[in-house]
Length: 317
Image (cartoon, rainbow, N blue to C red):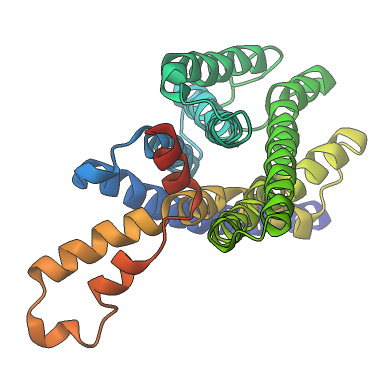
């Protein structure tokens, strides 16, 4: 009876975890799909910087999709599901590093050649994602249909999971944080110089840019918030195999599943996207309804001081 109760409790816990993961991934799928749709529908968004956001959203979209699919009934589909989810999730946080690199090269180094790195970015992101996915296959056991696809047998497989997923993840977090630090330091120096020469126009521009980059400074926290609990959970499982902490597993599955939604809000819903949407609303909405909604003039009067817009404007000069 005790064994039966334990099995029943484990099944209930698994159902709860599956439900939390599915809801979180569905929200991310909706958010990332919205960004992809905006890129495809609005021609004015098809600039180099937003193209990086587009590929980030595509990666998030497929990462969420394969997460929702869950528990296939045979070994082959389990294999395909697990490795596809791993591939696109790794690609997602690697695309954030290309955005950070573009920002740093454009603003700090004052280079206008960022579009020349397009092919290199694709080789770096997709090549690294493929390499880590292949390495992850070593020591994995996918021969038992009906079990959870992420289950791996032995300490070697767990080490490979940490190396091929969490090592690139935290490398991306550190790089993005370092990039923000460099950009923020440069803007602080420029602001002090503007104050020293009492140029009000330059001071105004610096304050606008500083406000934009202060907002961007929170972007590395997206990866930290999404994967901190997952990292702790994996390390705990490695140190104490067979001793799961249920509440930690819920936080792990929930926050990791929301990464795509967080990315779509932070990277995708910038002033350029809002303006494109507002223009379509202004074009098709009857006049009697426009007064109750944010007017198009409000969006047109906003200064382009967000991450994507700033990179585009600088790189096109």
